[in-house]
Structures are given as C-alpha cells and as structure tokens.
Length: 266
Image (tube, rainbow, N blue to C red; front, side, top):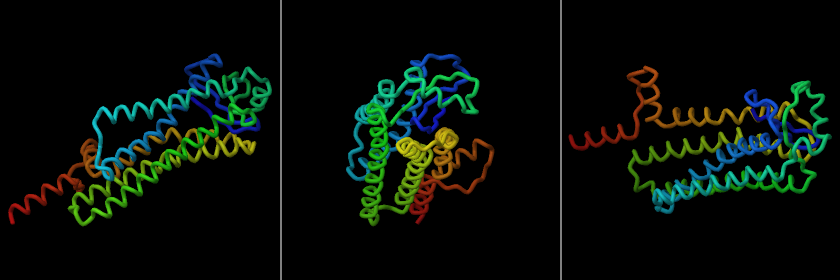
C-alpha cells in the first residue's frame, strides 16, 4: 500500500505493504513509481478518450486501429517516463537521517521500520518533478475542456440534421464522458494539487494526505458506476445480470427499432 503524507520536509511516499517486509529503498522507489504510473495513466486515459471522440465528431477522421494503438502506446509511454523519473528525482530515506526523524513520532509508523522516499521542494530535482507533474494534470484537463466544448459546438451546429435518436445517444455519451472526466479530477487531481500546494507551503497534513490517497482507489468504482448509471444499454444488462427483469430501460438501439417498425407500418 502506498501511503502519501505531507510533512515539513516535503511529500513523503511511504511503502507500507504487508506483502513486502524489509524491502530495499530501491525496490520501494520502484513500487512508488509503479503507483505513480497508475495515477498518471488514469488521468491520461481521460484526455485520450476525449481527443479520440473529438477526432470522430469534429474532424470526422476517427483514424485506423493502428493509429489508435500507436497513440495510446505513446500516451502510456509518456506516463511511464514521467512516473519513473521519480527514481532519479526523489530522495531516498537513507540519504538524509532528518527525513527518517520526522517519522519517529508518527503514531501510525511508531516502532516500525518502513521504506520511503521524499519529494523535497527545496531540492531542485524534486522541484522540477513536482512542477512537471502539476503541468501534466493541467495540460490533460486543458485538452479535455477544449475537446468537450468543441464537441458540444459541433453537435449544436448539426442538431437540425440529426434524428432524435442520434441526438439522444450523443447527449448520453457526452454526459457519461463528462462524469468520467470529473471523477478523476475530484479523486486524483484535487488530492494531488492539494498535496503539492501543502508541500510548497511546508504545511503538515499527514492524515489529510492519507485520506486523499485512499480516495484515489475509489476511481475504478466511480467509473464503473458511471457507465452503469449513464448508459442505458449497460444499465439494462446489469439489471438482467442481477436478476431484475422487465425493467423499463430503453436503449437507443431498441428505440431505433421501434421507430423503424412504426414507420414501416405507416
């Protein structure tokens, strides 16, 4: 388990995993980098989805499967590089005894030896990594905002040419994508921004940081609930799986079939 704490010396990333006892500082930093890659990729994935839909709706060029795979691989490569630069920028716990001393009086870790690393904003290499991380989040959500408003503008221009079914399907998908973009910002972006702000201002908040770190683990659940609640087809299939039948949930496909049949009868 990755535990993040905001302390006087900076942002502490502590490896408190019950499956790994007495791990080396190098292993601890690699595990922290792996955790950070998960955080970065969760945010990057939102931007990738919005950009892909922007290409389809606005540009009219969805691209080939190969282009999509290459684009996704590039995004994951950026996340990996950004995450593993912490191995060279963060400070290991054994490099300065002052960092370990800060954890001596911590009730949560008292009497236990844990491996950790520190991102100290007073150190230039740590500062660069923190600034780049902040710029990464702002940049991705800048892409999300730009693509979202461009999509809305394009759809409003083509409203007169769309059928009611197509319009409803697009609105449903837009709503689902917007919710999926908001959840990572609340569960990942906000905690990360708060953590960086407290770090730069040297404000201690160990308990707050731990709560915010745990909130990140809620993201997969939030995304699943979004799809189940916002997309009618998924919602209907979910109810069928749990044994709830005869639900009055009509998907766009079902509605389209009924409309076509009524037109043929007429």
